[in-house]
Each structure stands twice: as structure tokens, then as C-alpha cells.
Image (cartoon, rainbow, N blue to C red; front, side, top):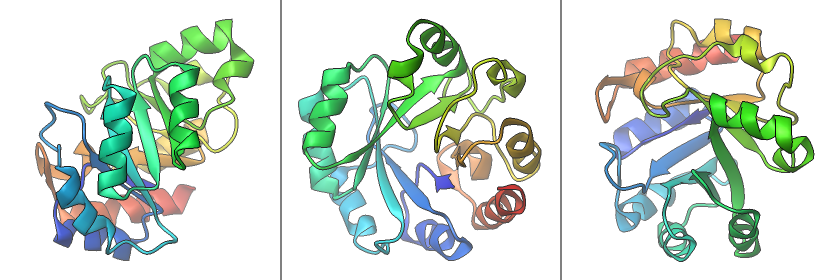
Length: 202
């Protein structure tokens, strides 16, 4: 499971101690969770090699993505929004793992028209308005379920994550606002509760 939007050593440490498999750092402009690559690098240095470090980008030029991901020292790049196959190939050729993030609406459109192409990526499937903290109806995935080790996102919190995992059967989950007390401010107790609840169902 991935705890995303981390910015402070204390909440990063809580996520790691709780048993997160991945930690995410937001480099997309305009988010209350955005962090500078140089600051993220100091956090990444404290992450064990067994835990994935993910840089999150949205509609940014690939040259900028590669520069910032390299500066931060993350090992995986998560892309939201309109990137081409060539963009993903460039990121992979630079030595990063990739996650392709799609809203449920984008996923349903693409899987209908290009099922083999969409299944070539590790996917993160989010609500129609990613980042809004909204849950989507996971029954929409039944006709064309994602393949492989995909991640479920969108409105997850300690109270609903176990139920949604049992309904959608993802390989993992991604949370950000669901473990915050205010936008951008992570809460240690909520992180621990979320990881425990997710572990009970994964």
C-alpha cells in the first residue's frame, strides 16, 4: 500500500513503521502536498530499499519529470494525464519504474478501445476527480477488471478501505487525503489505522 503526499520526517517515519510498501511525494504544481525535490531527497534517504519511493507528477513535460525525479532520488514515477507511450518509455529508459494513474472514467474508455495497451502498464485507478477524496463505484470494474498488480485510489480512509479492497480486489491501495486532518496535513494515528485496516483485507 502507498501513503502519498508525505512532506515531513515524522509522518514518513510513521508510514514506514506502520508497514507501508510505498511512499509518495507530490511534485505536481498547485497541490497542498507539493514538495521540492531537494526536500524530498532528504526524506528519500531515510527510506529502506524494500520500500518503493514514488514521485507523483501531473501534466508536466517529461524532461521536467525526469529532472525532478532524479533530483529527488525516487525510484518510481507516477504520471497523471495524457502522457504517451513514448513518454513512459523515456521514463523507463531513464531507470525508473512507472505507474500510470487514470480516473475510473479514463480507464473504462481506454480499456474498451485498447485492452492490451492499457494492460501493459502498472495502473492506479482513481475517482472521476482525482485528489478530491471521493469514492467511486468499484462495480464499474467488473466487466473489464484491471490486470496485474494495480492500485485502487479515490476517497479511501481507515473506515472504508477494507470493504473497498474486498469489493475491487486490487493488488494494493493508495491514500492521501484519507489520512489527513486538514488538506496536506497527515495524521499519524490515521496512517496507522489505515495501514492496519488495509492489511486486514489485502
